[in-house]
Image (cartoon, rainbow, N blue to C red; front, top):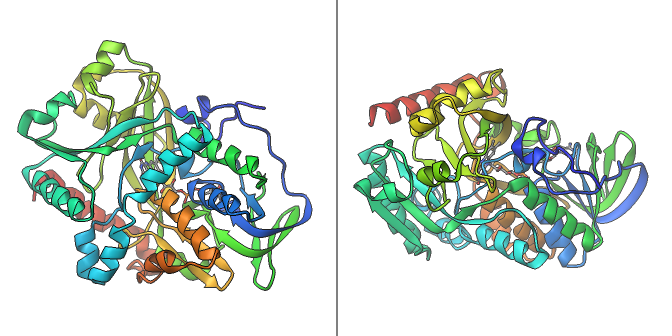
Length: 429
Ligand SMILES: Cc1cc2nc3c(=O)[nH]c(=O)nc-3n(C[C@H](O)[C@H](O)[C@H](O)COP(=O)(O)OP(=O)(O)OC[C@H]3O[C@@H](n4cnc5c(N)ncnc54)[C@H](O)[C@@H]3O)c2cc1C
């Protein structure tokens, strides 16, 4: 066993990961019912659902389990998708909104079932807050509450004016919405626990086994530098880290980087003054800040977006001003860890599920809110591979347009759009 540093070297999660076994690299040839490519939440969740249904599963991960966004993220269990159901209804019709709305809170339930069933130790806490920086954003939260309750989610509590201060020790906001059913956790330990559960059911995981080629056919051949898997079906779950495995989709998504820091552990009284009930928070800005306490009372604070997925040289320098603006009492606080990770943005902010042909499936593009949607994806992939594709197809049928600007200009074009929306937030438009 090793206490590995999955994810980036300077991540708090890597440093506080639960012990996990050293895993082999794929060498030679093997067979499987299903080969899953990618050891993040999408891949591990899909593989675990499939193994629970009795499939022989092989999972190939280019680095280590949790190396990608799943082992680096804010750990916030945020319900639903990055696009709200009223926009989905306007663009794609009531039927699609009803179908997606009926699944919007399921990923969260799956995570909690996983933690209970497999006894995963990942610091689960209840409750997430959406914090409004402007009156317009607060109005949006009122609409958000009404909308979610229409889709059956009633565990939302609005906090008007100063009422939010009992939850967040900051002057930055004008109100908040508390989702009692949301929460936060140590994401790397969740995915490591799910990987262990997969192996407990006979699933095989190979690490440091990057897939270099998928040869279509029956069976499909999935090639790595030192081996090959012949599988009846394939699930591609490389998200923002897969390069070139899904060329047909490349223009329809954009890898984006976001950065996170973790302070040194805070005094108990200091931590209590910031977040008395230990919920996690994200603000309502287009380029949002998100933060929470770790189990050992560090403030984990994230924000910023780099279109194209490059990481800034000075992450602490980028995030510290946001952290100190939210909590001036932490001015000069020691930052122990600073890291960056990539998520995959789609133009309509909805996840991209589908098939390349009858036996190669993919799920990706959660657009920054993927902790719950990846867990839903795993269940839907398993349903679809077992012959019941209705719910998977509700997502697969949503059209995805390419980013404007083509291969060369989609990064600056998207950054310009984000700059405009960021400006609107700052001016309160
Ligand atoms: C810094 C950060 C903060 C975030 N915060 C939150 C949050 O608080 N709440 C929330 O809901 N969402 C958050 N997100 C988004 C969320 O983390 C992602 O949507 C989610 O983890 C995506 O999971 P995934 O399994 O699809 O992709 P990943 O976790 O990125 O996993 C993909 C895996 O595939 C592997 N891979 C890629 N190509 C290959 C190949 N060719 N062969 C083999 N393996 C391959 C990679 O190494 C990687 O391990 C955040 C994202 C980031 C980056």
